[in-house]
Length: 87
Image (tube, rainbow, N blue to C red):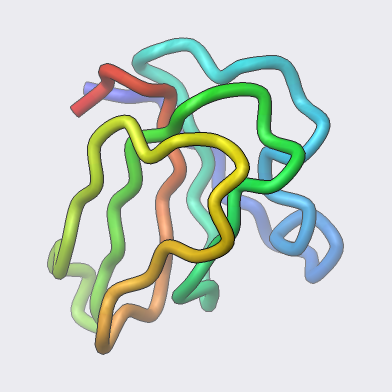
């Protein structure tokens, strides 16, 4: 089980994990209303979950590398960014 912090403000969701130290496995951030992310300026790989409107996981990506332009899933409403090796 992971400890996930929900980001509420527009600024916090826009920033996500940019500029933060590498997220350790077992920790992460929930970005409600965010269906796609990039990993420019991110300290390390992320495990990603893309959730639909009903909260069901539509897609997961393990160890998505830093410095990639886009990660998304069709129909996603929320994204959860987790430290690599959490999934």
